[in-house]
Length: 131
Image (cartoon, rainbow, N blue to C red; front, side, top):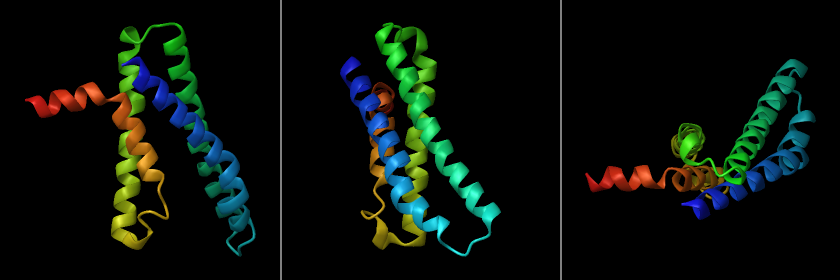
């Protein structure tokens, strides 16, 4: 169980770094150069960094839970993080499938998010299928 949490935490950290730095150098950089109104640019950029903050805070919580060895006492928080990541991934996947399915592997964030959610919620998934 602990190995899954360590891997999920590592994936969240990698996602945070790629989203923050890579996103700024690619998507955000081009967004700033567009003719979109400045207030919309600021709002989109703020939402972009809210996702980065979400990843960062989730990783910090998971690290603290593992270091303090309080996994069983913090199962609700772990479930919250796992379910949230899984739902983010499903939302991303559905948006791609319903808007432009050709982008399925060009916009692979859904793979990372569903993987993190699955790693954190593996026991619940197994119990679901055993019923």
